[in-house]
Length: 542
Image 1 (cartoon, rainbow, N blue to C red):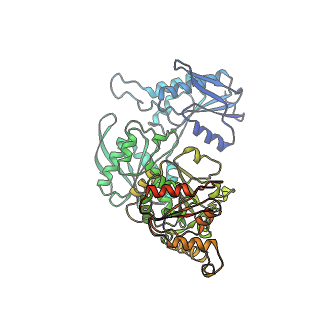
Image 2: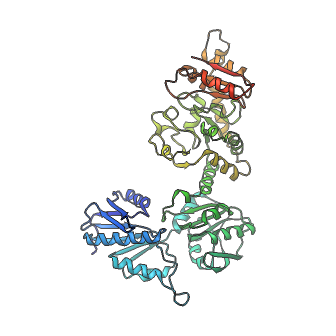
Image 3: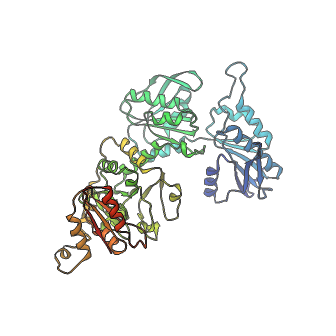
């Protein structure tokens, strides 16, 4: 029964919870309360916790791995809705599993694509909505209406926004030529098409034979409907590289990524892999290469980028790697309240210190940047302020933290959240940046202008005979050499020390960033003396 115009309800199985939530948020309805679990023997259990009588219900469920569990969840959900008198049931199947066996290629082969279509119809679905079927003819296997959506236009929009020059679209095999041609037509400009001529000796094994078309000196986009074991796409990418292609981008609608796929992609010539969210990828299948590529792209395209470094860089043992990285990036650096010794004060890329215990130059840079890369910093209100949404207010924020719960705190507003050890992220960034990024000369000059124009210690205070704690700190730290250490107490000592200390290459600044840490100063100073012989340790007590 079709009751178009009645109340809409969105229900999700376990395979597509994130996508269902995105759809619900987009159309402005909540996801219906439905629990899909298992009995102790492994059978699927479904509990519909709200009425669906007469409603227009959309069941969002991809039939990806574990395909049998997800398929049974879909069928049982449809059956439950039919028995609960739903007005219309639409099976939204972003990824349609069992689609690869769509014909009898040899004797005694099953046609699983038709079998699954029969099962969905028999369960009680009134309509099916799916995306990029493995073979277009599967649409005819259904005896109910089917809407077949294509992901190529979404992927084309993504690449149009990137604005990559000298593009050529490459079809990974002869069967994908039509799809690749439509995709190329959706790109800005007159983008040519090339074809990979390959031989597949057996299932999931692919051998590239030849390339039809010109790819030498071109940026290449490889398009496929799905990437499973990634043998086809990686062999194609490696072959294209041998034929003289520059950057190679791979994209697909369905990121199945089974078996050795992740390892193959990481070790291939693919610069970036883009997949749609038809399949909900677990964290272990989210490829770091793509994230790193996106970070570098954002930094390259920005006009006012800033690297914000926290003490997590030292804790991860990545300080030397970080210094190497910022030299490659050519991007201004701002330090946090616990990391003021991350970079020397006279480094041409150093701007200042951020937060309530920072300085004007550092805060100016943060508040005026357009892309902010935060490495190893736990962004407390001391650094973001109590109105955290106004921190780096105009910036595209890329935030790194090793703890996923930290990235989900209300005090952080991030466009990209990178959950990993900062040591690993810095390694990957160093690996991907082979030379030096083009410096943002005007932006660097602006940052250095702020640094020079708004010093923490004014010139008149340096010569004034009256005691001034800021000038005293500056003079004391100027007496220290590289590899020396400054330990400061809590309260005013730490705040002023964080602002006015002059950091030299290799020098350490140790303070407790927490509140109410009276008596902190001497114990760490003794610890430094024990750990590092022949090092001058200066202690500023409260």
